Amino acid sequence: MMARIFSGIQPSGELHIGNYLGAVKNWVQLQHQFETFICIVNYHAITAPYAPVDLERRTHEMAVGLLAAGIDPSKATLFVQSQVPEHTELAWIFNTLTPFGELERQVAFKEKSAKQEQVMAGIFNYPVLQAADILLYLADLVPVGEDQVQHLELSRVIARNWNSRFSPNAPYFPEPQPRLTPTRRIVGLDGQAKMSKSLGNTIGLLDEPDAIWEKLRPAPTDPARQRKTDKGDPDKCPIIFQLHKAFSTDSTVREVETNCREAKWGCIDCKKSLLAGMVAELTPIRERATELNADPKKITDALELGSSKARKVAKTTIREVKEKMGLPLAVGGA
Ligand code: ADP
Image (tube, rainbow, N blue to C red):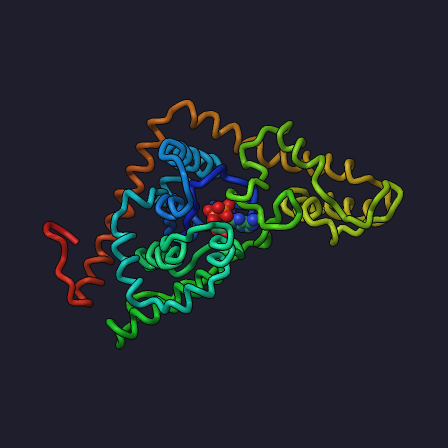
């Protein structure tokens, strides 16, 4: 059997270049080598306060962004989590096999809960649903950014716990491994936190060149470089040099590095050169998104088709899991 990959993305805001460089670009390449499942994880998105109309719109926009970035529905199964109810069914089962202490020490939980007055159990249990998302498809590899590595470690613990209880002789669930890109963590425009939909420090994948420039222009660079005549250190430039490495050609990256170290360029020159690289890569994506936006039904149909393909696999897993656990199947199916 061809190895399977699974990855998810929350429809909690705009698709940004951190998502693109850390995950989506990788998915576009991997869909040719693996059986690929890409899920828009709306059950994860509702763990933060939201308005229903926004969620529906963002789910649609996320699908447009992913298809425009190069996800090909004839290669990858692109679907919406809430259209495959087996995700929550397996998550409940996994809750019974997840040590509380493992959830308590998740960094993402500590960060998210610190920001809220009242912490809901959904945020605490988020990595359990994530384990269910992945293991429902018996996925071997999970192409994600660095922020997800600890969650994935927990998915392996859950797989191991389930296997040792219910399938001790032949492990049923694989232990999924992360697959990182060279740009595994993109820093946000504040130069501090990771770029994230929920932090408002993003550059949108579909932003127009003018909008990108408005964000690049004030972005912080090497703090020791006060004047254009000061020599800079690209390794101390948290955002711009990192993005050059992702979007510019190797020769441009070398040129940028020399010109910064020798104070031949000011930071604005360097940012203009970055803008050119970004516009070259992102313009075709933005144009494809415009075409897709002209036909909303095509998107809804693609998602429904993907969800029904995903559901076939999910039903088989749930049936096998319930059989091994002594749980009668649902009437008329899994
Ligand atoms: P966000 O934090 O923006 O809400 P998600 O949690 O939906 O993003 O993550 C979607 C994918 O994008 C995951 O694989 C995640 O690892 C990756 N990702 C998110 N932010 C970044 C970032 N700043 N750098 C690299 N990868 C990222």
